[in-house]
Length: 397
Image 1 (tube, rainbow, N blue to C red):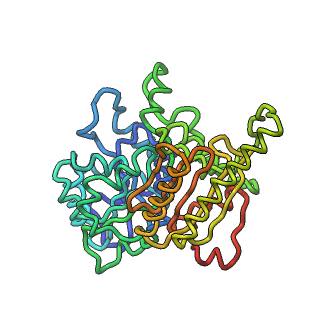
Image 2: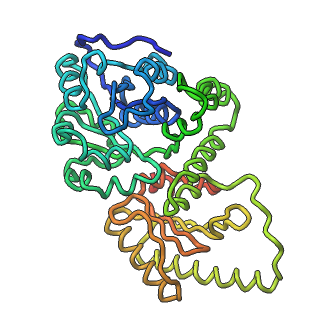
């Protein structure tokens, strides 16, 4: 939907606007997902899908003409709060630093925030005059499968760690008295859609003129599904499971845990009753040691879940809350020491240091250590059919 477009010479309206720049070659559901997450998490009035006339970091081969890519962006915009914008083509700007400078001059009363996926934060030092970009506008980083941890531990995040705002304070990012550099990591479900993957699927079918057939009716599918009761959880699970397929192995268990139980898990071949009892007893012992270690470190809201028959990645899950980075790091370190003392070899630990969600993978048992905001956001208990009581909800949220 094309809708209205911002005037090329600007205006003096006071608005909070998110800028999501890109080639949109083609636009897809992931772009729309980022726009909607930014509208909610940052309290924006609008998100502009800023279609680049040409990305200097991408090859010209395979790049659809600008009008085609602009129409592709219009197909996922709503024409009201999400707008497809071709100002860079109009202004003949090619670099983000120049575009942001013109935006600030021609829309003096608007407050802009640059939206980017974690993959863009990783490659930001390759941009021309990227440090000026950081100083011209605050930016918000959203998760991206396979890039989130690398981005938050990368050189840009480290260099501007003093300017990072706390989780949950995204709506303060555009406060009038706050000047860049300033940025926030915006929690959201990871979306695995990729323009390059769409192009690969469309290869051999001629030039891309719009979204491929499986994404072209995205809005119609979304509206029709939204009208059916009880579908949101299943859609979220499907989206997360799709991201699992595209994610690297080290992040699979987080995505699988957030996707929730499968409706029809493959039946396991029957095992002798004595062997099953022995395995369950061994798991109980390991689980008890994990719980004891977490309790010794003052973990809060401990929850244990039995996943047998409901998940393929583990048989047990333990979830706990830590109130600070240091506490969560200590919990993970003591868990590692305890499990190695029990005979476990090299453990897979994802998300440390300084992460809001640390996963300790002990094979048949996985342990999730959350900060309160992250635990409330991902809500693994509800995803796996466990409800917290009122007091636990208050402390977890």
